[in-house]
Amino acid sequence: MSAVRVDRDGWVMTITITHPPVNAISPEVLEALGAAVVAAEDPAIRAVVVAGSDAVFAAGADLPAFVARGQTPVAAIHAGVALLDQLEALPKPVIAAVEGLCLGGGMELALAADLRVASPRARFAQPEVALGIIPGWNGTRRLPRLIGVGPALDLILTGDTIDGNRAYALGLVQRLAPEGEALATAQNVARQLAHHAPSALAHAKWLVRAWHEPGAADREAAASVQLLATPDAGEGMQAFLEKRRPRFGSGA
Image (cartoon, rainbow, N blue to C red; front, side):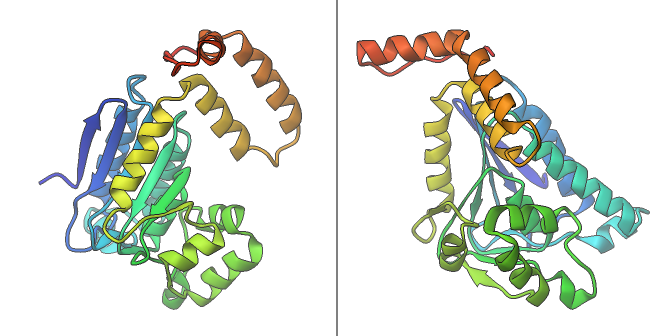
């Protein structure tokens, strides 16, 4: 069985990790995720959901599996960083649907998504300090960007586990779903986003992620001017005047 399953429903792609028992992120999982992310670049896909099982979203990196393949821990770190950067850079919304355990590298995978949907039974942790290491797939960068330096240090330095309710209160999770419904909720959000203009979603995602960089205000102004000249903007304004749902294309 493949380590990752890819399903398409209209404009939405769902990428599901299927690597029992705990969805540990092995070289095979990384490669399959990478192939799925490449497939998600298809303009016919407008939103992506990443999920695991009902019990485990994903555990940490399977370092023994990398070693068994002849890859060093350093190679495993670089491979994971490259995959998560590739996922984050997709010019369309990516939503992580979390039920159960979301630990270590699995949590870093969820952090690379744009939005996280979880149920109260989700369990998030960066437990690397207990092993004498630290999050190595840019968790130390993405987590404080989401929840602030203090809360991020609390989670990373203690290695404590928090549930979905606490993650939602911290801002780590953007939508709290009933137990067992994280995936369905994430897919509903993805379908909602997929009806928006792809060009606007891509620019908004890029600008928000780079809000702290020099020249961010100028880039926002330039993107706004650029988008005003697109067919998507024309269709959106016409639909507003006609009081109907816009029919956006995929052009930039």
